[in-house]
Amino acid sequence: MKLSSLSRRVVAAAALSASLVVPALVPTLAHAQSEIIERSFCVFDPVGANGPLFAITKEFQPVALQQGIKLDLRAYTDEKVAAEDFKAGQCDAVLLTGTRAREFNKFTGSLEAMGAVPGEEEMRLLYNTLSQPKARPFLVDGPYEVAGVFPGGAIYLHTRDRNVDSVEKLQGKRIATLDYDSASVRMVRHVGASVVGSNSANFAGKFNNGSVDLAYAPAVAYQPLELYKGVGEKGGVFKYALAYMNFEVIIHRDRFPDEAGQMVRDQAIKRLDEAYAIIAEAESGIPDNVWMHPPAKDVAEYDKMLRQVRLSLLEDGVYDERAIKLMKAIRCRVDGARSECAS
Image (cartoon, rainbow, N blue to C red; front, side):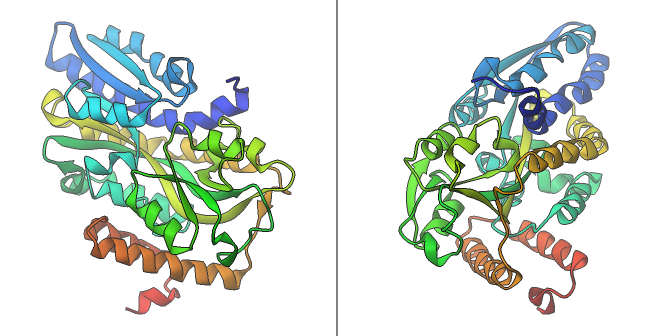
């Protein structure tokens, strides 16, 4: 797969999370021990060892070595395998998407809840909240700690046919759905569409070759995964945020200093503007004629529908109640006129 310079910059939004963990951890570890120590960092990159995510993390190997750390970077094209190796203790740290990371921390795994984060302003408030030291109890779950949560951008529905422009028209359509994400499966079935089991490595191919009618992804995936091929001349990108994608760096707590996670979070929040600039560039890179803009009255109905699905998933224990309440508080802080804010 050939990636243009723009594509590499776009995918760097995800790589930002990988690049932050090393320089943040290095000073503490280096001062704690004078001898060379080894730490493994497993990185999910759909392209593999030749991909842009992995390439950026490689830049930090010499930096880490100068500080006394021999960093063992491992590329994974299958996110499921990366998660399983981390769980088995074969990785000291891992970079995963928020949905896949849910098994390691239910709280942060709920941040991608359907419709829970309407836009960038709400997401920034959420990141700022989670970067505070007092938020650490929510980020620690047993032997794991979420050392950083980083923005991937709003998730949009991509269609091969612009005539599919309403919920009613989704009935019977084939949607590439992350089959390990019960929330996505529930949402697709709720609108009467057909679930076509997929994962982060193959959903784009299914959309591009016509195996499915629709797929969902953030703008940062549009160029690198060549989703424009699936959109073609007759399709489009529905500009309504179904959810907000994030990437998470998770560490084994017993393999890093106690303050390591907070150090990563402190560094990450300082580079939030950089990440959002990349996301903004990715969104502006999608041609104007490709975007599909739903009318305001439809948006209000979509909000209600996602809220129903979100609350049903909360009742079923898929989402963490604390995370759902926090995001509602943030939504109401930004827009107190929302109907849900009266309750």
